[in-house]
Length: 246
Image (tube, rainbow, N blue to C red):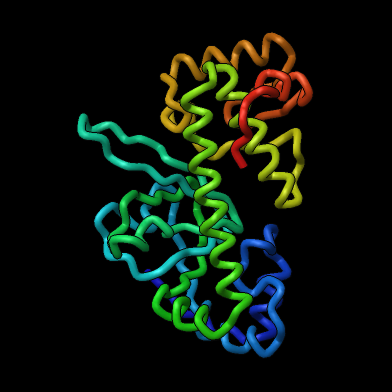
């Protein structure tokens, strides 16, 4: 259920100051007078329990969502009934852009843990973006990053061997955790190995074998979903001639 939470300008600034990826927040870099106009735009938050959907394929597109707490996966249902994971999203990132072109969501967004999002009604965002130059620029920047990430994943799946794909995935997760102020070498993965395999285009058994080999070779230490990168440079060497996925 969606609950509206009144936010003052001071409250909005405080929320932004606590975000680990300020460059993805709509008020980033804006002057005080513009932030005043955003009060009503980002005025609702929604809590999503683990394994519950934020939205599903075919749902009417009405808003985009900034992840305030937690993490999500996006997936689509294939013709044979299997789910194909298309992405993993973390705190500070945006969900819902898939619905802009058709006004219907084209994928499912499922919480990987108890999460909370800021609801940003798209009609109001468009209206304000026409008059606030900084907001329009920031939104275009967010959309551009999504395009770059999608292209990177396509290159990854098309040109990398299994172990290279997993190495690229772990390094990408490391970079994203670092950007949020967490350790670059030790982190907890919220997704399952099966979900990682779906995202990377690999079978579960292949992902498990790659993790085991990395551990045997002293590249990482794995304890269930807890990952500790022991040799970052050797992981990078596995993919040094491949494009990176940001």
